[in-house]
Length: 604
Image 1 (tube, one colour):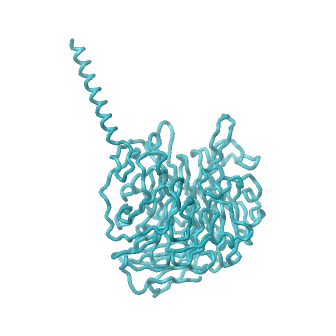
Image 2: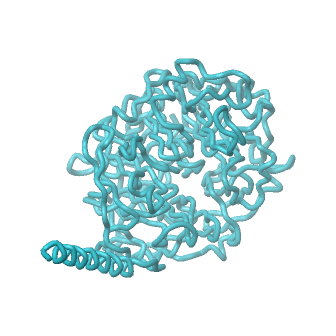
Image 3: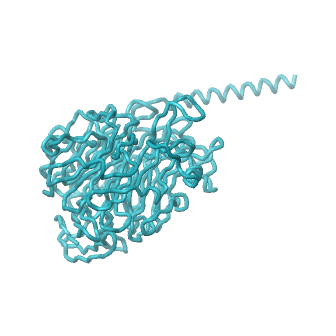
């Protein structure tokens, strides 16, 4: 009898538990709204032997952020002259004709000339008399130091194609030389080593970036490749994704490049397959290096001087739960130190393996004005099983060359599909804000999310979407740039799948109108410093020992580019500012009395 009573009590307890689960599940059903269900979490052991808490596919509901210093944004896509019915995964905002008005390259195939008022004209046919590029993205720099911007156009081959004119069967990256406003394609012989441009089978390039890594006054090129789908491997006849080597090309002058990939051991993939496009295998040393990490399939890369030692370091964003990589430059040779410096990702032990994130794009910017560049890495974080062990989007505070991950304490919320970030001071208060593009409008996972524009309050980031009336979602990328020359950063967002390109003009507002700004365009001397001044740094000292820093960048994330004109918000600073220029590869200039609310060109 006693046994029967115990059995009945146990049955009742189990029944109550099941009812509780059912009620809980019904309260977290899919809704297409801005309200997110409460967070649950799972605790695993971190690969760095500490403990980490990994969020599930739901997120904490936070109080609505009311921005006290936000501008007014207006959707101006329909009147801009940019295509409102197309989708682009990569955007470059540059000045290709040196008229100081910003132009836009969409994907790697359509060039629009800006008139300085926020209006654009398609000039693809006239700018490319021999035929336009056929590519997904482009990164720009003055590669021959002749005073105008050239570019590298890349195609993603094996990746999902969302750009409307790209013929993926072309399977070839290309280099384009600017001849004073028109472009010609460089010959394959400009890249004589192992490269798609040398007639080898194409690599699925997902991003690229320019920097002078060896200090010779010429910009060099790093190229990130993701995966190739193969129909068989030595151990299986089923389709498989195989990672590819990334490349580092040294500029020898005369637009000629040589392969220097061995200086970095960039993303050699694990296994015993031959290097794609050749019959050779990675060396035993390289294979051993690869065995220390999961397969690495890069989605983007970013150059920056992360330790303020005067040379450019390289961060590689890897997909498919692999650790990201940080190649620290020591006078032209590199050491991979992402784990040592605490910016490789979470590194969570789960079910017998170590997993990181699905990082797509990353970007460097000094959000706390301490003079060191911080890092945001956007991670696509699938719900379900993946979310229990893959990284959320990470924000790494630079503590002087090593990093502390602070996304949660700084208010960065979970999203299923953060894709590519960008930095910019959208309200001119002297603090960098950031735009995080979000993909997956109605496809995978719930809840559906809008792209995020986070406003820097000085202590954390507030989600300014509602305050800014920003309805965008399903964006792959975004760029903050002053396209109408009114001293306020506007937003160009590139669509993904069921969302098209859009442009939002920044109309200021009552509080923003009181903030000032300065723009600075640097020109290197073309000998010790490249003409684009990539890698050079601008510093403005402010009160309380703080400093506003901008570093000229040659492409970031998954093949995007912000303007070479550096836009610096000054807040309440009036009159003039004093500026320090640290040129790439050494040398500095101290300039006093630069008038605010103006563009200043500075030549080394």
